[in-house]
Image (cartoon, rainbow, N blue to C red; front, side):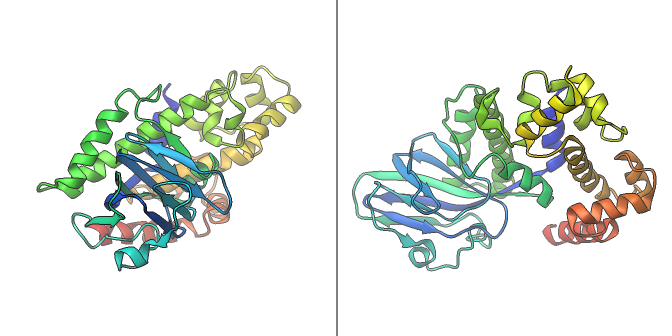
Length: 325
């Protein structure tokens, strides 16, 4: 069973291009923390350095590289490691929250900036998710994910990158929709490649996504992700992993950062978030579909995890969809 496909279908991602830039060294840009969502950049020409947080190591990116900041952390972009940086709002003359710049423009305006030296072509944007829980899962993978265009496990990544760059720089009628779909595919390829590179490594620790890539844990991931309605016990899950309860619980927490039942509950709430968007399904039906015997028990669990009651979540989601159409 393709568990990753189920996860991707459930968490739903939308993408926006906020920045298309022709930069010439020397240049340096400081970008504040995003209000929501994950920030990404694609380097379509030249090279640059990115630094996340204060005093962290700088990562060099070259043409064809893709980088994502799952937490939308504040960061700095530079043509070389020692360039001075200016706030992006000061450079563009527009307010920048990390994910909102240029949303009122179709397409995003071209930014030209720098000292006239060797060029870097860049475009960036944001990924947004239907639930905060989905974003919290992604953030467990670390503050920065870096994927090269020729990375193993993503054979079509370079082609998608090329299409996205051309569409961003030379928009045609329908470009907003085309870019949105291309960005979704870029997200999927980025995630697949990043997980493939981390398969079985300690770098996967504390990432719920890693459960499906850990040797011996695939049957457990399948049980939880494909059958969240089952009344799973720790003993049943441990049996699928061919481990004792104690060893299984310890290993599970090392991989995901959660106990088995806490992980199950979080996945149930993410699934419930998706089902609640279907107004033809009553809340009691949704509760049963994710393993709760009563609507009241489900409502309590949902509000504890998601911060709002199921009915309120459904209303807010409907209002958001209406605002987008």
